[in-house]
Length: 279
Ligand SMILES: [Zn+2]
Image (cartoon, rainbow, N blue to C red; front, side, top):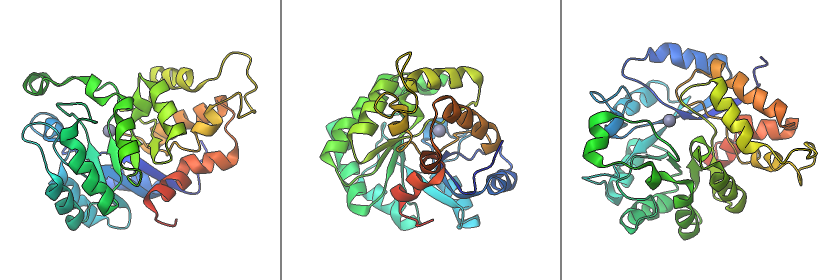
């Protein structure tokens, strides 16, 4: 596996059980210049699961300020966070927001003040989109539905807040056609193709979602829409190591005949444009 000269990981998590120093070393060994770390909702935090929330992520952002870029979480359940909490996260040093597990569709009126404040503050938002794993008691309490996280729920937000930068996660799996129409149609929407396991079944699902009709000329962007898609898909891993996810991603790029300049967009340039680091 060839390691790109520059890499940005736009979708990473830290766990309460993780050796964070070892994880940071793995990211650096794979030439990650920035790693966007997502703080998770109470839904996923201990004792329900192992994911770190705002306080946990903030601690590690301060430990590795050159590498880690924090996305703070605002709760979309009951009780719900408000726009002042968005501003508070900005003041603490979070660059953007991670939103997930809403009790209402993402484009419900109740959430609009959060997006408005994030737009004003120049904070990109990464939304979980598509299917999400079950978590027993938490699902029961929240009456959670993956339908609230359909990619198309980002459409109204993208139109209403044109200066808000929106990244959808997981190509909206399994609603990838929606995700693709959003990322090709909105200048302020991008999607990552991360997943919480870097395995063959997920590769197969991504390949199916991003492949053109049989017989298409893979090197013609008018026939192979994946060539345009990868200009707007930044690299992200979710839970897997970069060393596990990168070969999966590269196999996908090879199968879809993605040319070298577009690969650089995918590896780091698109993320650099979204966040404005100037890498
Ligand atoms: Zn994730």
